[in-house]
Image (cartoon, rainbow, N blue to C red; front, side, top):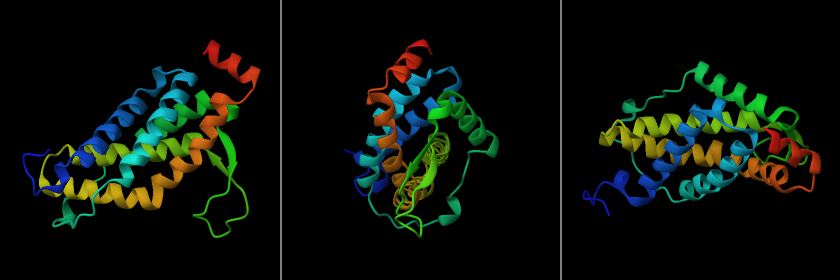
Length: 182
């Protein structure tokens, strides 16, 4: 329990969300050192946690919206994206039906690399802002996290999990063997 009972930004669900967001960010910052199998297993395990914790965030009223900041540069996003795309190779692209788009019946092509890099950007921005350790920064981080969960990264996690499950558990001996050599 928080020593500041009136500060919703320090409650257990928020601290747990920001901790998991930070772990995801650190892992993606060092993605070039990871194997394909390691990345698949890590994301398969952490994304459901991010999703669950995203559903538990409190609704806050931000007192100082001008305290909001973004931190991830285009180069950082591109680095994560490129490293993931190189690791996933032909397994990067897949088809989804995404309810965010106008036509909910037409499949669209998705990219694991792009979606994981987008989630990285949100998690890194939010956890970095939260670590500024001012009430205004934390309020903005929590509110953005909740809003972006609803409009952005929550959808991406939902789309990614089916692909990750398929890549990890499909009865595809060639793919399983390729994981073992990486």
